[in-house]
Image (cartoon, rainbow, N blue to C red):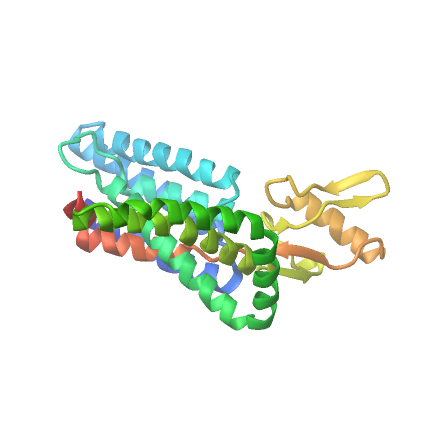
Length: 286
């Protein structure tokens, strides 16, 4: 019964998070903190009921693991603060058992999240590229031209990797070296594609009043000698937003260029459903 309650809480939290992330590109703190506190609350109750510390320990371990992963993703600029806190809430509710005779469910969820997130991010980027086709084409041509020397080096490397294909007799060996030759080229063009999408589709100019805490501003903002915002900051703070609003009203700054990230919560939701119904499906290929 307790597990059912925890599962329902995760599903409702992810549905609400998906809605707000798609609509506003922001996950309200009340969703994230509700998941965390509800998870700990239910686990404390269950611990008392069972006369065992295990439910609360499992919740704390799940929170801690996703806290570390979430902070790593946040400080490397992969996710926003909302995604990180949501992940902590999911970790608290799912928990991490200390029976390692099988793949922990929380580990299955994270692996599924990486796989789903990669596919989801690529699909979203393709849609953006199609939607902003003209700007994307210009950016892609510029980036492709910039790495002309690197492209030649990679093509030569791939050609050298293909040499064993004409020597080896085993079809398995031939297939392996063909795959190895494709990887450098495909990686290069995936990078060019991702960079072009970012440059042409993911930046917009907004008035300071439309900024929300955690938004990534593209450029440094200075008023005289005072640096109000540095692009090295981990997103704009509430205090900085208030300053920027004041400077905008005084006519000292104009609209601000911010990076609009991909709403990743839908990939959290899809990954959790896959985990719920298929579990560690990837173990079939190990």
